[in-house]
Image (cartoon, rainbow, N blue to C red; front, side, top):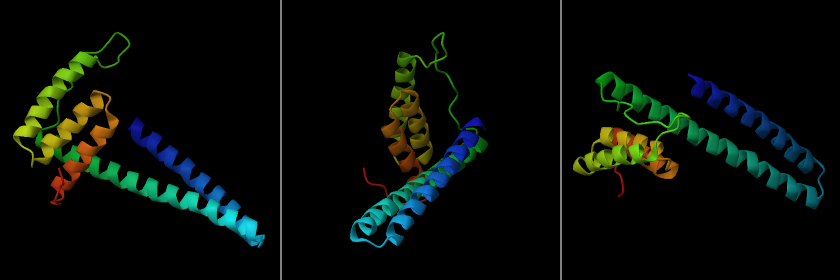
Length: 150
């Protein structure tokens, strides 16, 4: 729940920022000189890109949460079997061991979204966020019945 609240607060702050930046862009355009119009259009592009990015990220998070809920209902969510350091961080060797098992599971069933979901969690635990995101995107695509490139 804490992660959802943090995400919502961050998204709200970003929306306020986009509105403020967008209003500055409009003010620049209203000045109606070639330089201010050019800068105003450039400034308006930033919130448009930001809104698009926020929207795509929110869709990704919602779909991933739906998969987690479905996997939880099936009893297929992976157990937290990772060793932790005294400070509470995940032990790297432990994460690597779990990752090797999840990777083998995914190689054995490459068309199963569940194995890709578990692999994404293993990547995340191993602190490899880009690969975790790609694995989760593949799990989402497989669950939605879309074709997936290797």
